[in-house]
Image 1 (cartoon, rainbow, N blue to C red):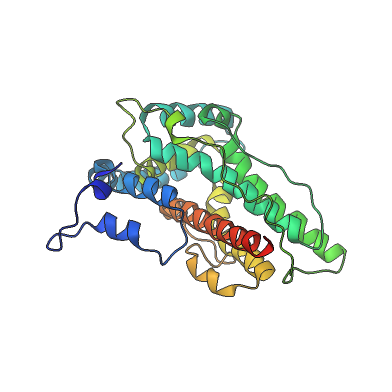
Image 2 (cartoon, rainbow, N blue to C red):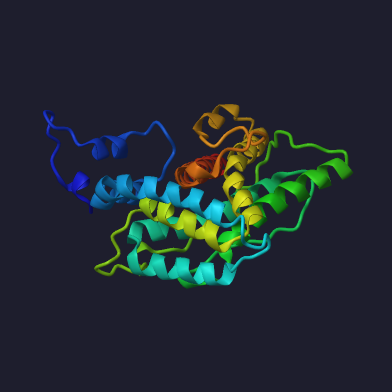
Length: 290
């Protein structure tokens, strides 16, 4: 367990991580919150992130200029994913890698939740990697494609059948489960110290370099679909108040790619909170039926 849970509370020097862990104002499972805050409290985030972030954003600008002379369709997605997995396995903290793997599972479950409770049926492409090596199959790129394809297919089907999303009385929560991913199985070598936010800032310009401008732009702007997915879920559940948890908003106003790394962290946290909320509602519905 991390120090913020082991150390006694000192009223004259309260630990901010302990305060955030104990706070229950936002939905987040304890074991996820523990991993998230352990990673956030690391020395890497405190000392390395402030150095890495401005350099990473500068590299995004440099690569954008460099790509002017490259063929528009030039990309090396498979090489990119092998580099990303090498970096994750060799240098990123166990908590960060665990959260990254969880994100694919949670995203797939949330999409399935919306589709299962919608008045139309559309094909799904579920991405649920069992380990870091599974990410080599271009899963970061496929994750972005999956999201846009789902929004397009869902709304085309709704329009074609003259239907729309609306509140559902008997919600199907069957797909909302805890991902079968154990933190103990994640690489925990001596060099696995880079926190989630710093790793994302480092990987963002690498992602940009090995993909086409269109792929990178689409990936960055997929983050603004957080509000779209949130509206879908809130409509089905009739809980518009939960949209307050979103940070990546206004999908019709594309944002600069310079802050894509920070927004990706917010996207991950929003996904975790939405999944936690659905898990709580599933448990509540099960207790009422018992």
